Image (cartoon, rainbow, N blue to C red; front, side):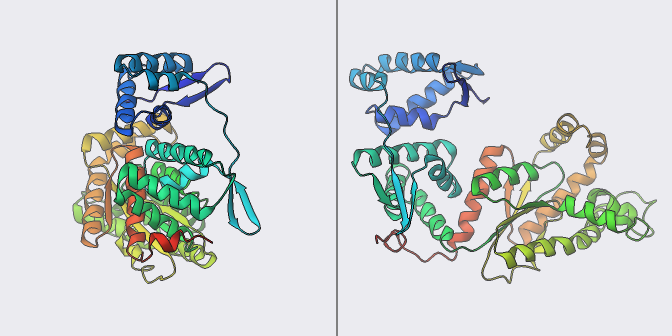
Length: 395
């Protein structure tokens, strides 16, 4: 479903329509959650043929739907002007106090695997509780405890537990090393960028860029397999340049090139571990063979994920799109070598499955991002031993 932009002519702003925001507005008006979310979904569907709508048109649409429900109390509450937002302070230590930020709060919820709409809803509900308490300052553990119970009430114990696991991890100060693999065109860099934004990770790297640096330093005559695409590396193997592509040759060429690229990959990972900073490393060279070099790390969270596009037509469509989005990369070379690319993906998925590496089908960017976040949480949960009382202990 295409995104709808809500335009506020008075403030000159444009924001995407989000069910979570509308749902929270209806909740504040006194509507139960299930009814509010259903109505927000209904309105989203009614507006599906629009790309832009003004705030006035949006409000009129909501009012018409509320009139149909014959609930004058909710209608009256919704149409009243919003009450002013109080300034809420959050205390972390005796000397550290900051203003409560819905943006940061929402980001922490999304980091625990909650989707955008639900994160906005919980953040809005929390703010309402904070304002109604008539307190101007809360300890960070109070905020966490209230958030935990809101998640439990609205979405169940499992969702609340994931948030608990994430908060526990953020306080451990362990670096997160996220490794995103996948064949050409499966969306690795797009997903890596989105995950980095949600987690606030500033250090990202692609294996393609590391390979490019190696090409600048090492002449083609010395390492010819390095100076070509991974799906064509078999053509640069000694004695195989004139043969027809076979599954064995494609895999042999890929593994040969990957072994070369593992050297700078390992160096980048080891530096992040030494400096105790989180890192996202993405690229076609991420495979179980690389993981064997770093699995022994105890004081870090290593999360390997293999992305996949499981339908040939869909992968071809993405490869064609490269010529439009990034003309300098072109698409003809990828489409003319599609069988090799597809075979390489089959091999990578087989290896990932053999070594229990999480496989995520990338059909939709937002859903894939949320699944990656969930995978991170699942890895964190393996070492989780805390309780709600311990993590949100009051000072």
